[in-house]
Amino acid sequence: MVRLSGGEALAGALVGEGVEVVFGLPGIQVYGVVAALRDEPGIRMVTTRHEQATTFMADGFARASGRPGVALVVPGPGLFNAASGLANAYSRSSPVLVVAGQVPRGAIGKSLGAVHEVADQAGIVGSVTKWRGRVSRPREVPDAVFEAFRQMRTGRARPVLIEIPPEAGVEQEEVQLRDPARVSRIVPSSEDLREAAEVIAGSRMPVIYAGGGVARSDAEQALTSLVEATNIPVITSSGGKGVIADAHPLSYGSCFSPGGERQEMNQLFEVMQAADVVVGIGARFSLGNPAGESSTLVNINIDDTELTRVQANTIPLHGDARATIEALLPFLIEAGAGDRPSPVEAVSAARSLIAYYDIRLREPQYPVLEAMRRGVPDDAFVVWDVTQFGFYARTHWQVSHPKTYIDSGYSFNLGYAFPTALGVKVARPDRPVVCMSGDGGFMFNASELCTAVQYGLDVVTVIFRNDSYGNVARDLDESFGGAYGTDLHNPDFVTFAESFGAVGIRTDDPMELETLIPDALERRAPVIIDAPFGGMPIPRAPQLAHVYDLPWTQPQQGLIPS
Image (tube, rainbow, N blue to C red; front, side, top):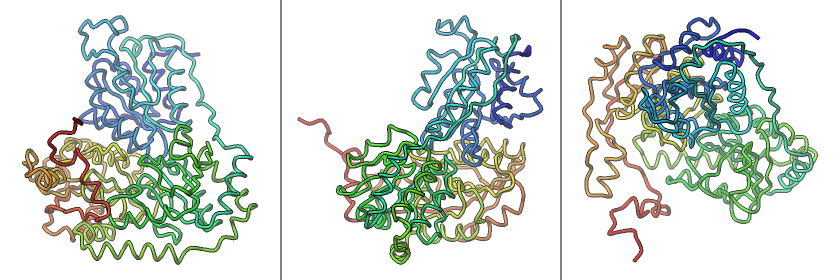
């Protein structure tokens, strides 16, 4: 044991868990923690300009590195501000630890009006955290850090919270630091694996539906080995983009969601409907059953609550994606799944049909997206904000390397992309990082340009500018008789970037992004590219027109039944 302050115990425990960086904003209730981080040589703090960015950056760090990201904020408004990033990390099953200060121990829960006091602070983030703990004195810190990281590394990864009152950060007592928890990957029983293998091997038209759980488990290579050994083709969810290269001959590509709104998504939906066995790996199936009613779902998931809620005809395999794939493959070979003829021609035909619809519909997103794809290095991390280009990219952006496609998941946090991209760059300073944003979303966290310049985070950010919250404006105009409250007044983004010490570039033709992006990456500096772009209609497949006639998307006399 060694005599440490609570802040020193926290810093030492974090280093013991392999943490090298904390994204934080110093403040009065966390002075003891900040001082300890300052004096700990094995860790550094990246200071943001708003608490919202701390958790977004920690999320980006986690998704790019595969290791938990850590954020530090003051209590009350600091944690409220950080909650948006926690919601985003929760939606993408990302391991993020937020360390939040508290009011003094004697004031907790008493409504005395202490600085930054809120009632039930942990409860305000209860719905977007997997586990929450509070330490009252230094000797409790190692156990809390141990449990926080154990929670993030076992089961389904999601954000966690540790609260520290200000006295606990500065008081000293004898503390016993702990080694990280030994974590074993969960594998289904041999009987369950054999049953699943026999069903898969006996199927006529199986398909794999791979989700983000493959990436969280570092199972990309295991998935590719499974596909190539069995000749079973793959469709990925948007969260699973990159878990197998889109150019792989047995990859259909990604769909926004089963039965999505566009024609090419329906092609993939029809593939799922035709399959007699769907092998789900690390996928939520949140929008319903992607398989036909007569099909069997072999569902591999670390989250046991996801296993059987989709349909009754399910073979649940509760386990870690990588360990389960590796354990299942020998049973599949034994059952004869390795003798399956290759469906490469069918996959190629489906992909050609998707490309045909892209060209036939002549959508404004398509040529610009293709130009950007040619300009962005294959190994670059690309972070997409909630924009029309971001929606379109969920299906069409071609991904070659694992974990390099990052979006906001079902949380759809507008404005999350820029600080998240900075977190990605901290995790992978050796790799190109490109942020794709709209003008509305970028301004949510535009002040983090200070952070980018201060820490030399050379992220290239493309801002598609239409001086409007364009998606909302279009929907209001088309369905409610006119847009309202959607026009925006923007700065001159080139001058704005330069005022921070970043590089500003403007183009009048978005097709120039093919050359501007690689040129910007050569600058080795934070770069903003201002790319004006007009409104973008969404092509709507006639058979899915009912999606746009939902009661709450259209003017109504009233929804309450008489």
